[in-house]
Image (cartoon, rainbow, N blue to C red):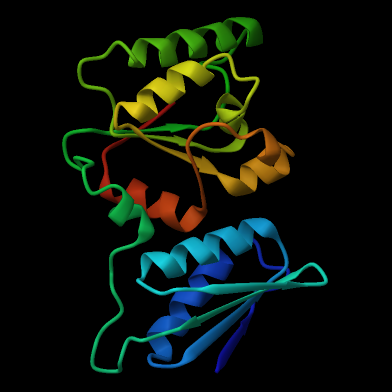
Length: 203
């Protein structure tokens, strides 16, 4: 058994260490120890994306994730991620991603900025060719919670095949994880991968 201790490590390090262990030690049982829910969810999602069946145990605020790496030494680790498998229908060339790092649009008046952001998200729902993905980080995650003024619009976009990724670390920072309502809680590994495969517009 290969044990990877990820206690105290911030996103995306637990996922990167899990990835490295799978690549370096094929055919072994992998045990990953994390000490927060965000890391737990990220690692579990990553392992499932690689075709594994991770098992979870919790003990004294620690999470023990075990998975049997069935990849042999002569068979390379699958290169597709949970992100890519989930986004099979996403047109990576024609539909850009919008990177939204704030809950207001532009600089100057905060009140005006919030109004402009609401109008912008609403306008996206009326586009014949909406973006392929919306990526929310930092204060942008506030648009994806129960109190968001654009919650219904974002749900409409998601139902219309727009992928929405919400930074889990950012939700934790703002203590909003329990308020999250729309989009997939994600991590820096998946977000970086998507940003590297699409045309990206920063808002």
